[in-house]
Image (cartoon, rainbow, N blue to C red; front, side):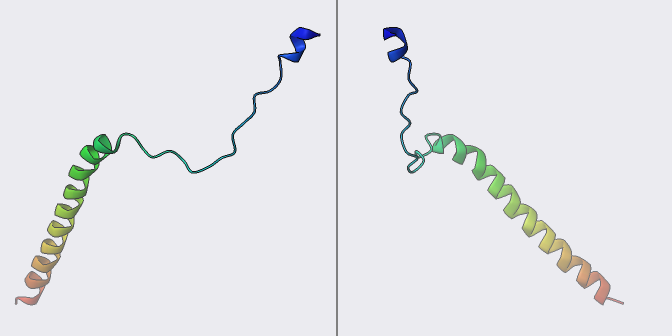
Length: 59
């Protein structure tokens, strides 16, 4: 009986705010080049769109 008295389910802490991410430096190191590439891609697409409009306007 004494052995069973020590076998009870652990008490769970109520869910609170999630912990702050610890790897922000690593995440930023990965995300920054991706953000820059997306910005460059947008600029290239816009320039291509303008070039195509100009090509369509010339006789």
